Image (cartoon, rainbow, N blue to C red):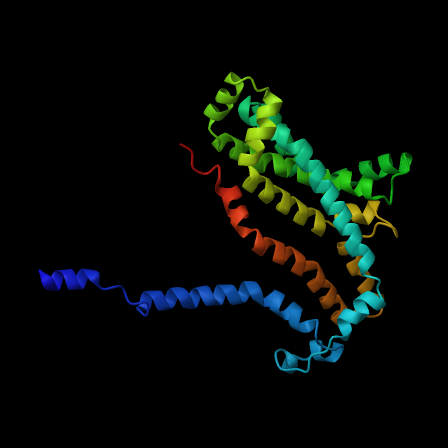
Length: 282
């Protein structure tokens, strides 16, 4: 009896063959996934010759001149500001329009409307490129933040709606019924009850929408100009007809990637809650 208790109390050794294979496989997968980012960061501290040399892959004398070149020779601050303006404004506009739409589709079972919005999301963005350009050029909005923000709604608005529909489905209807009995209007209960309970989902949808806007290149190629050049479009400045400034290009790529990576790490708890909220009901 005592031997059985002692045996059951022992923990499984983490060095079993199965565990070793699992962690070894996990390490290989992580290395494959993270290697491009690691190489990008290392290359941003190398000279052009070091980047091209296989012998200097990990052992080299780091420099910071590439980051200075990005801001001094390529004026990288302006694209950063433009991307922030377009990303924040398009995300806010998508949230303001998308949350009521998602709540309406969820509570009133407007399935057909939801399918139409989903179809818009599936259509490639390049399909709308020429119509957007013709419309904005006619009304004089090409090379403006407003035009870029509106074009990004084609991506952000359907995404926010379809992220929030299952989240609203997971909220108990008894709370809304109690609020209506107490004399609250539909708009009042939506603002005072539904939205505070949906903060993780809203943060998730907003963050992912901002990332999509931050990385969008297609609409910027047609609708942006010298005044509204965004970060993905500014990357082409490092590529000339005769050569590519790889060091400055890698430094610019790091500057584009790191803010999004930091924000994602800081808000990962909300992202997990928001993406899994509608998975289990009851």
